[in-house]
Image (tube, rainbow, N blue to C red; front, side):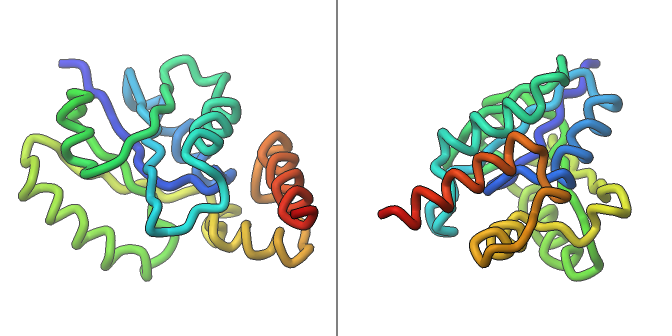
Length: 164
């Protein structure tokens, strides 16, 4: 049986921690779908199309990784994609309670899908997209937390926001 895994998130922006998890997952599964959630309630910094494009560019070297945007219930998307696994990243114990609750709810909705948790490499344990955005907007250097391509997109977005 071929296992297809989905790694969902807002990816606003995709960080080195996200990339680390995807690259490691791509060695474990024949196909990994990076599912970029629309997430309008989170007031994303980048549009859904921008986030999909940035993630696809950052992961272009991973042959068995596909980046797709989606909206609505993750479990409905998983069913549409015929996925058997949902991957979730855990950075700290504080992430676990929410992720555990989410995994239980998802299991009730679509019991055929298993949720697996991966932790990023040590150097990315504290990196979150929201922290990256906040530090960048306040003028801090985030180049160690995102790929060069993503760093340039962040800086361009900040410059554009300051002009308007």
